[in-house]
Image 1: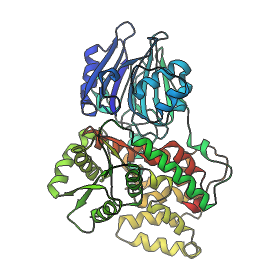
Image 2 (image 1 turned 45 degrees about the vertical axis):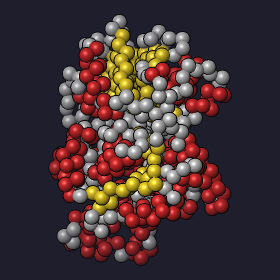
Image 3 (image 1 turned 30 degrees about the vertical axis):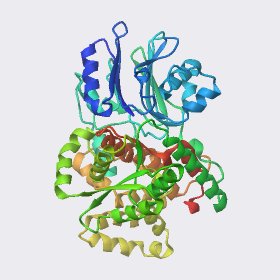
Image 4 (image 1 turned 180 degrees about the vertical axis):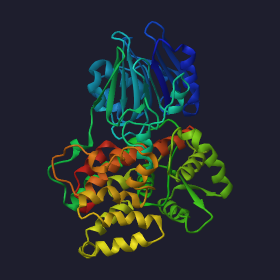
Length: 512
């Protein structure tokens, strides 16, 4: 886990590159590396958090053995040893960094499809004077870029781009989407000209042109038929989870697990403990208020699996102090209050370990959120029969959430209801309210975000795929990355191994 930044511009000197790197020094306190090519106006910067091959030989920027390519990279590729063995790579280091660039030198863009892991990669081709950017399939690692038609820059965080002499202009469409969804979907950010490279995508930058392409899509994992046999599904998923957790435990530094006591984190912790020959360190956050405090569940799980458990009870002053820091951490609007406990559990874990495993992704892949149950309830024949009086009762309520729920009962078709299902747990404004506030185009709607797929999906399945493509990378994983990297802590997410994601897409809704 690290921080990367860079640019292609003849207007920005090397000191601007160093300023970009300095803005994200918290992501990599162990080493800094700079590549600056004054002939091409190209700069690459890297802040290193040492996880694999702790020697200086693995520092970045890293050159290919033939000297043609230079790379900076953030993340981890878990299957790098298998790749090196399969292709007979003779490497100078024991790091995944070298395997990535040597595979790219051999196979070009096709090499990325062989990587299993989380990554944001920038590779400059010195010979052809072109830059390649890659982002992992699910969007675990962030990668932002700025392009105004003349100058191009990229970075792990927006604050690094903000250090450049560029103008920031708020995008009202992004504001509209943020108010409706609680985050900004797709490639946009809150500012014009500042974008995200989409998950599963790569970009080629050459001659002041930026072209983006996809190398992986969730839709490609949707099969014409689904897995319906529970025993077969259980066996397949068990094998995949064990394999993924084993991969995620590869580390040359101390490692632990976030443990909330919920199903997903408990599963990851239990498998990690089963694979370890000593007690795994687990970490949880609790609260003084009993109705919010779930730390007791985490303690019970830790006791059952035999982990070495660490707990922090959040006090009011702790939360207030962190709220004041959030603007500087997230760089654009962020609506999830769980950013506070995530920050605190990362702070707690970093005192003991450098790498932590998280259960993120399970709710999205296997429909664990409450709004999935809302969707199922709406199909109840009794509710369908009385949807008009139910809607009237909800609209008469003084509770804003109930008023928003009333919109769902006003739509006779599932296609029109689905965009409102989400608002019951996450969103704050209706489309009409946003339009009245901003006089802007209506927010992006759920059904406009899905590409073609080989079988007809239910409304609830579409909901789940929307979450995986949007909520997961643009909200949940943003929180995990920013909160952990403030403390130079690497978070790994075994349940988001692309093999598990693809498996979930082929699984019957009834088994989720």
